[in-house]
Length: 474
Image (tube, rainbow, N blue to C red; front, side, top):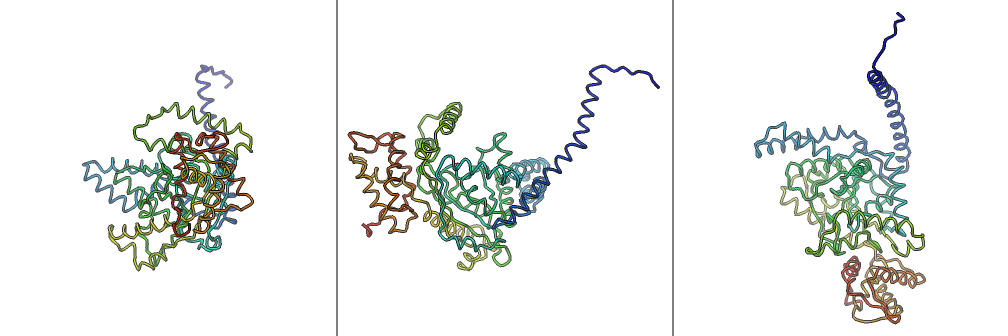
């Protein structure tokens, strides 16, 4: 019994490794998972007591359960059979495709990551770059929204900072679910984004099977009351003007909507604007189809240099350089009321008739968004400089003309909040920002638009292009 057994070193190490893995799998990992679940549940209980719209059970469903729900959805199963017959493919192969699509789309929301890490990151990044201003067209109407309804924030899309800015500003009211494009599908960013409740979308996909899976996810989330954020334009504006609204996502949400029995879907218009859009130069470059495409290394190098320079700037200089970021919330639009006004039941309409009303709704929402897009100092000064681009004017003359334009905008009801006391200083800062970036020339204390910067000046002036001067007011 006391015989010594000699083992080779590699066998001993293998046994030791196996024992460690068993301890890890049977003791440490279950305990760690229990600890994490406990922390997450505490966060959910805490935030649900202060949120206007609670986190929905659908958002807390395990990702695998969401995937199974999509794969075995009746409409997805029908689409699988049609796809298999059309492409002469085995049913198992088509189901594998659907499984891959569902896994790609379905988020894995983590309340702890969203409210403890995501909120902290969004708040810190937003305030580091901008002086943030938020306004409400009628805050009382927002507070009166039925908490059991499906709330959808519809907004214009000027920058990828929109995701950060709006998530931070509504974090005290609800948890948002975004649709994000292919740009976010890079490791490890995609895991973080999915844990924040976002879902990936192949925006230009023409694959009918993929579109069906995406449609069913959006529809299921809407019916479950998940609070969502949708960029109605479908992508970033490249010239600064508001783009025509897309109807795809609205149709996904409302395709089977029964106004009499389903929970109400309430759209909240959101207008976003910046004194400086981080991607402005690259967006304007894309307007020229023949411009030389920059390499990936150039993009990485430029982004790193920009980030480093931003971090090294003092708070005062950073505010001067990036200026204001402003978000305005408009009056809610109820789909239930829309259906009553139009005397329709969307679930009973054929595709052509339904799209007719969806298009009407999308244009109504886009008009509401246009009415609340903030008028900011850089956009205002860009407009004034462009109107006088052939003249050399003093700072005082430009600010005087800008002040006159402010009065016109206020008479039109534009969302502009500049007090008389702060007006001169704010407009001076806007001029300094434009001059510092090389978009205006300076000679003998006189300034005018730099020909090389006209496209960027137009980009910023176009952000308030919906408020063109009314001849009756001048």
